[in-house]
Length: 165
Image 1 (cartoon, helix red, strand yellow):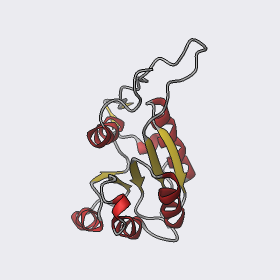
Image 2 (cartoon, helix red, strand yellow; image 1 turned 90 degrees about the horizontal axis):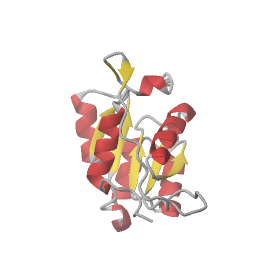
Image 3 (cartoon, one colour; image 1 turned 135 degrees about the horizontal axis):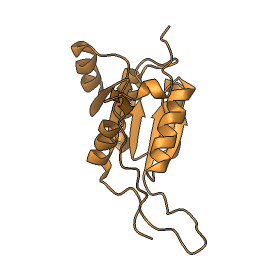
């Protein structure tokens, strides 16, 4: 059984403080102080609730719409129902592991181009190779550096998640 990561333990400590990404919202909303339109959707699949909550907070504060799944079966359902622009996928999950989820999604032409990023506690070279063989586009090890996560997401989705309002 894997141990859950606390929200702070998901972030790599550098120089005594967690690394922070620039969390600027794009778009200014309207005169009624409504938030900008969220245009890019990210599926976060992790069986640890605290991990999902942390990623949701970071991603939403950066302007992304977030959909969550707590196991591999839910990840498949949410991917088909939500049609995400990018998937953050833990590997060690119940029902279906991340490798199986990635392989299954890659068999469908609708998910051929959707970036899938592994967010995992696994760290060996074999784990990384197995992830890429299963169809992952990138591999980040927990605890991860927040700026590295945001850089990976921006690499696949572009720097501005929502258009200027």
